[in-house]
Image (cartoon, rainbow, N blue to C red; front, side, top):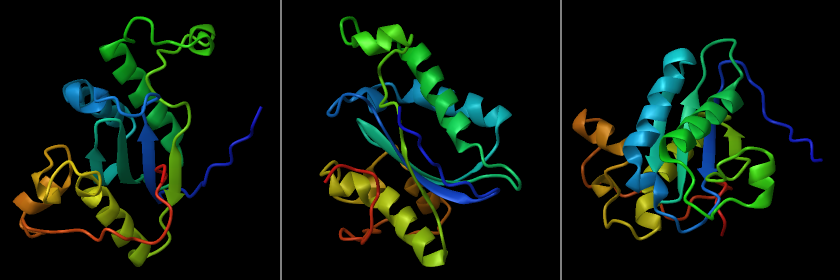
Length: 178
């Protein structure tokens, strides 16, 4: 069994990519209310600051800052994934034998990708990556048109222009298949 070493930085800021088990599924946007409910219930007991988030049909990205002294983003993701799976349920015939053995719904990839934000430039790049991802995937012409993104919050608050276009060629890794 693999041992996954997660970056630990109490009160740190992290970028995440979390994917469904079946690429191409539209489950996250078709059940956005269930995902929102799972998120709200989780952060009610395990607070965090959500700096940016975008939900696409089969994956999501987030930039979170944890409270001082807190390192447990893994438990937050576990709870969000578990609650969403319970709310939505597994479509019949989609669970692999390994999911049945572990009593998993099989909706999510078991792991997620995380990156510890190192400085202001890294922070800006990962925020931009979140916001621009719907445009990169061809879902919208302008990132601000995507309804499942924190970019809308920033536009409504006047902190970002409505016609913001993110960079399409950011250097680095962001946890998505090429």
